[in-house]
Length: 304
Image (cartoon, rainbow, N blue to C red):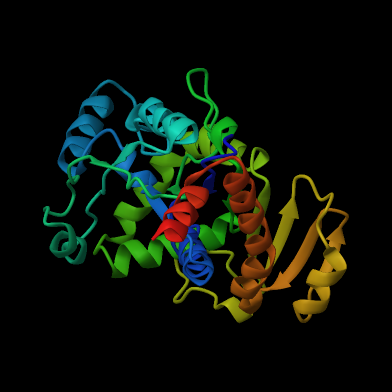
């Protein structure tokens, strides 16, 4: 953790909805005038798309049919931890982008399935935001949550997670249902060993629970809408959280446990802004007092 250079991580599995959560954070950063740099978990995959297919085939020949991006061997977790450590110490580091599709290829100038070149994080960055699979992962070799100041978990119930992944991979990426099913099965051991344990490391979890039948994710015709779901919002350390205020501001919400609020799915964006904005501002005030980027920017503005 770093007082001067805060790091926020959002962790979720493929299809969990972390991209939507990232957009909520972007709105908060823009509204509050904060200069954030973004790190994508996909940028720290060890292999590009073609290399991954080759290595997967090699592993399958050896009898390993569960080689996946969920596990540490397919990711540059040591390098990611080094970026977290370096940014926390002096506000610097490097990242890149993984190009998923043709739209991103046009944006970044690299073919789909490849990486862009490594680039330095801008010097005026006030906080670092990570969104991906491993923001709170702990293994024998790395401990990422120790570097993060605010850790968020996005954890839909597993059938909803699968429905979201199936629809995204089928409609947006053109994968067949059989290919998607094989991917889910191949990733399952790493999902249990490396994804699930992270949600015990996070400070806040948002778990979306559908209120409609999702018992067979593989035949679902559509993704349950926000209004067809509830969100369980769990705090690892509830001390200092103004639960009465949140319940009064979020219509039809209620406490289910001493550290949890249940929120209507359609109110998730509002709830996140109400919950997270004060926490982010608190991080930035601590950073300013410690001489972080915000204090330097303010000093430059006063001298201009």
